[in-house]
Amino acid sequence: MAFPQDILTRAATIRLVTFDVDGVLTDGKLHYTSAGEEIKSFHARDGAAIKLLVASGIHVALISGRSSPAVSRRANELGIRHVYQNAGDKLAALADLSGKTGVEAAGTAHVGDDLPDLPLFGAVGLAIAVADAQSAVRSAADYVTRTPGGEGAAGEICTLVLTAQDKWPHV
Image (tube, rainbow, N blue to C red; front, side, top):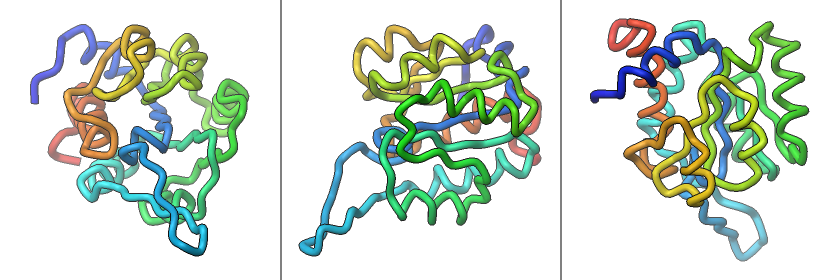
């Protein structure tokens, strides 16, 4: 997959990738069982790529405005150590992450799809919107994926970062 050179240059300095969950790692639809339990659907290819990103030494975090046991389980499966759920203030989560990882905002990429992601877009070094993000989010992004959220967009971002750092496909 070919990426714009200016985006590759910026992605070469990324040491932390943060992902929103609903609409980025999932298709954004909320499904409930008759018992009221929430069900989320994650794309397997996104998971494989995130594992490669983690294995390469890039910090990965999830920052979601909602909370779900499925998110905790998926993060555990993928080796994602930093998970922020019910994050009403995503900038506060980013500041906490910076303290825990030693990575400043300029060395961070955030992947989002909706209006609550916009404050992070103004703070990070690389702002990324999924293809089906809100129009205001796409307009504010440095890069818009070709792939919609929940359908491989996270894998595309992992490929971008690993390619920019000459770690793809030989992690």
